[in-house]
Length: 106
Image (cartoon, rainbow, N blue to C red; front, side):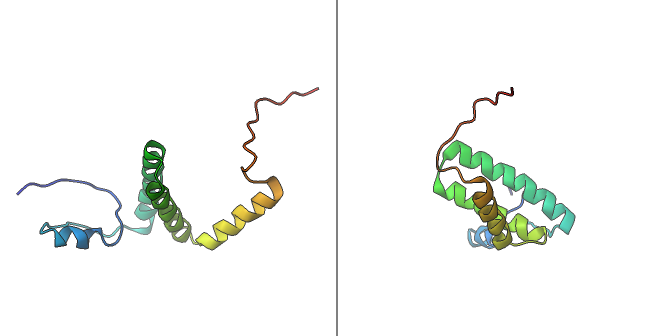
């Protein structure tokens, strides 16, 4: 029997999908502290995948992890989105494509 070690956080249905393929998924449940650390790792991983691929599927994966991070940290995606909206009102968005090259002080 061949064994491939992953040691990574996966979506909830991945073990079931693996089992349907006739394979055995060996899993464990993380503590809250471990979960947060793995979510942060997953966030970096998904960002790297998006930057490499630039696909909307990878962007959606990044968003899914962001939603999980918000929930795991006692917040909600709605709260994060409200903060985003407030910042957009106060500081603007990125629609004008402005590149700040330098600031000169008198």
